[in-house]
Amino acid sequence: MKTVLLKGVEIKIGSRVRYVNDTDLYVTVKGVIKPELGQVYTVRDINDLGGFLLKEIRNTTFEWYSPSGELDYIAEPGFANWRFEPGMPALKLERKKSKTKSKPQVKETVDVPVRELERELEPA
Image 1 (cartoon, one colour):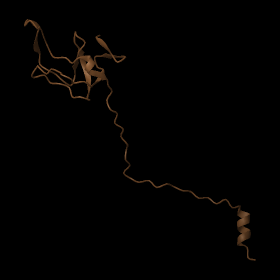
Image 2 (cartoon, rainbow, N blue to C red; image 1 turned 90 degrees about the horizontal axis):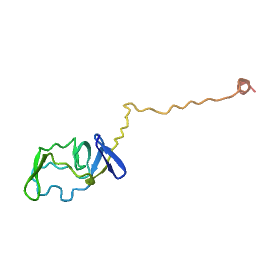
Image 3 (cartoon, rainbow, N blue to C red; image 1 turned 135 degrees about the vertical axis):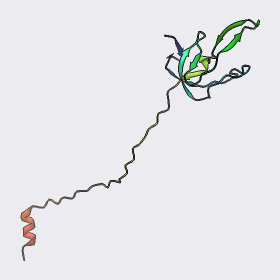
């Protein structure tokens, strides 16, 4: 299985990563769907250059040419791993709201011995 070490964390297919650097991303290539800065994505594949293909973004294949004009390869555009950091989805904490309001129950007990109570009730 392909893996990449990213800021000390092993990233593999299925790992979650946060997109943190969009500087000059595919500025000369039109038609590439790009990730949104700050969002968390799932790694779908890792290409031969160590770049990430993301589960949430699917691009069509492009023809990639060398500076001399020769066709290098045909592939879906990946995103360099240095543009990401290990990411985890935001946790959503849900509180269950009760439909009925409960009132605190208070139990009062008076511990008075029965004989003392009887004496208080005797006529003087």
